[in-house]
Image (cartoon, rainbow, N blue to C red; front, side, top):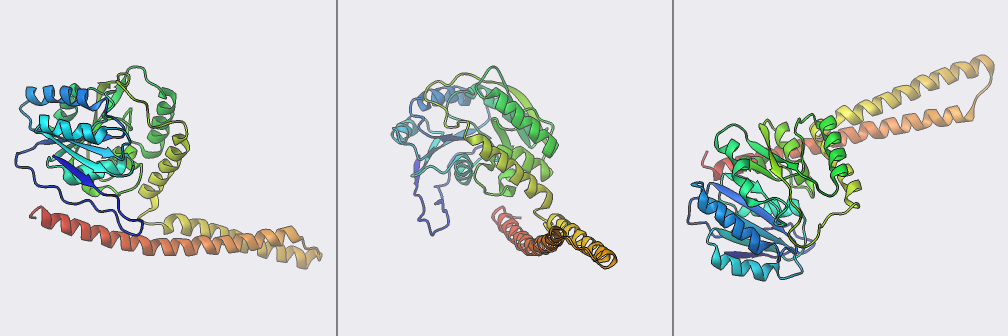
Length: 332
């Protein structure tokens, strides 16, 4: 089944039309973002078909064509006729992996979701090992840590090292293939590129996390979509996630404390400068400039914290509305 998701106009919110409901029971939905993967998809589906036939677990595969410029969509329509468990969804323009996973989740039927790339660096034969701890109720989310040589290994090690320091999630590889319960996607914020931090965000919500080794292979065809230019973006995303987890619900804790400290420093410095001026008759212009700067910045930070508290309150109300809607949809 092939479904095309049209890109919204710039003034509209992104909208994904409802997919026709699946007529077969599904335990696990494999979500496969694909950008210019026409040469990899036939072999990927062939290998996945062997896995589906060899296990009693009911699988479906949802491939999200994320604005491909090659023959990916045509290949997918052909593959849908050959494999009844395959469903294809299309973005007319590239939206990124996070959006592709969100689209796949909205079209998925399984209670367990698996994020798996189409480039065959990870073989479909390892999917059952990712899913097994969740099926056994031993974990809510399972990540695979890479085994083998691969490009950007140094960058990956630095990224994972910094992530462990900031977030205290003791897994070896945050940015790899993953299996997770559907409920996790219902709690994650929809932000570009935040799929790398699904484990961190899920752990912060109280979901249990496990890891299994997964061999990494050279790409079967095509080239990587990510270069060194992604490193600064990754660092900024890391800081953004850290702020989200630490201060998003109580922004006044950060901005209010900074503002109060700067304001207090300005007041104390001003009083001290006045005492010196009265006692000696000497005033230093740079001291008064520093005092004014501290008072102004302190006031700005404190006001920012108050505004942040209002935004946090609105977000909390919106979150409750989303939970109520999800409860009604699930019949609770």
